[in-house]
Length: 183
Ligand SMILES: [Fe+2]
Ligand SMILES: [Fe+2]
Image (cartoon, rainbow, N blue to C red; front, side, top):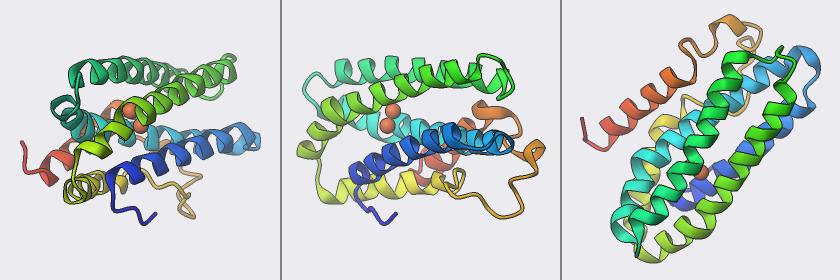
């Protein structure tokens, strides 16, 4: 991805998230766990980046910013709760596929909400320079969520996501705060 504008970058990540859901749904049985890990990583890093970078900005800059952002956070929290439950239950859980469907619906509702009510208005209220700076901060955490599998790492399921999505979200938050010069 070569997006330098934070909104283009986040919308591109929404597309990648859709593709990663497709990959989980279409994976042969022995690849489901690895595909689900990739999806989990991307979702964890993406939502953390939005919470740290874009939502605080939108809250300050948009008319009714606090209302717009609290609606988005409610959607985001719902999606995260579903993700954490699903991750905990694992891909062998009998209800995995039903719950994955629920997660997918929640995530896509949320992405639509962001694109319609937050990103479009944020674009009108920010400069190119501001959006580039925000994109750079989002990118610092992207390394935690490789979209393509690295050859040789996929079979080592046990090594993936030590500590689960919450630990990954913390790691992403630290990287982003450092990049933004916050503590
Ligand atoms: Fe989000
Ligand atoms: Fe998003």
